[in-house]
Image (cartoon, rainbow, N blue to C red):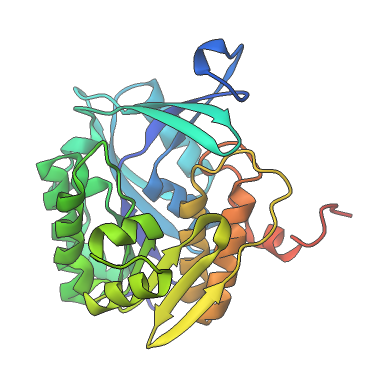
Length: 317
């Protein structure tokens, strides 16, 4: 692990994004905004904005979307280590915001460059230089090679003593609940932090419904710290037998909720890597997720440290 400022390594697929500019059916929108998004890169941006140097590894196509992603992540200060696939394309998604609380996302990612990642794409021999490895349940669902890549990263991080963070991030269009649960159970005992929405936790913890029981179930399976995200109802964490409940914070206007969970994870991990308590990490996590909802885009609204500090005052003077 690094001897100075804590650093994070993450990897996964980031795709181009075309989002309707207003609410309603995509076909009826007069304009759309072009950006990019991916759970792991969203977290990388959130961490970078909160003062945690972060490395993101992936494969991108040799295309306009891939180049846009490279420029965008580097502009945010993320250490990008993405190989360019001359044959396979960068994935793409369409986001239709039918209302402030309902979003439909269509993915065009089959056969994408990132879905063909292998362990050779990762800096496994040098992994000990990072202080945390962050993974999600999306990457292993993309393909057999992507699953192999994720398992190789988990095994190597465990061998060299690098803590692992897992956000379950279940995607029903990519794999079944049984397959997702099997993967989580395979890696959870090696994870320092496990994040899950309450619906995702129920996939892994059979027969439980209450957030505190879901967190206990994840810890019983091997997680050191379990964090259950409850959307507008805040979040709950279980660490060392102690339960921390953090209520939600008011949102002035909900614009876009996609990516709120990633901002939450970034806020939590940034505080923990800076040495904060679970309570303080949960507070920043909930506030970060809420702030992201106040702006369009999967990551654009993620706060930096100065925005968090002045969040009680809507006017900068």
